[in-house]
Image (cartoon, rainbow, N blue to C red):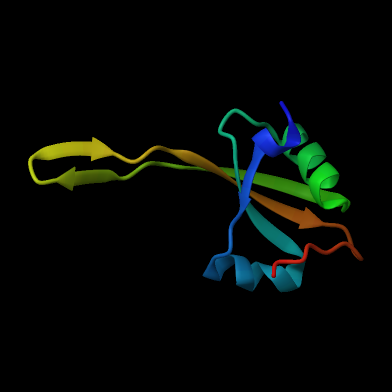
Length: 91
């Protein structure tokens, strides 16, 4: 997989801002990607050194529109901790 197929977007959330002082960042990643692919993609895209990668599969929620019931898709979130001295500009 290409790096831009593995990492979809940098998540800018409230939880992510609380993790920033610990040098951790949240990413939405491809659901098929493993930790090794995520690490290589982050290092290649952002030119930083990754210390640790943790992943979470976020389950889709049930939604209802009038009489039709459905479900939002499940997705994968990665919490990436960078080594000391590395930083991602989030502006």
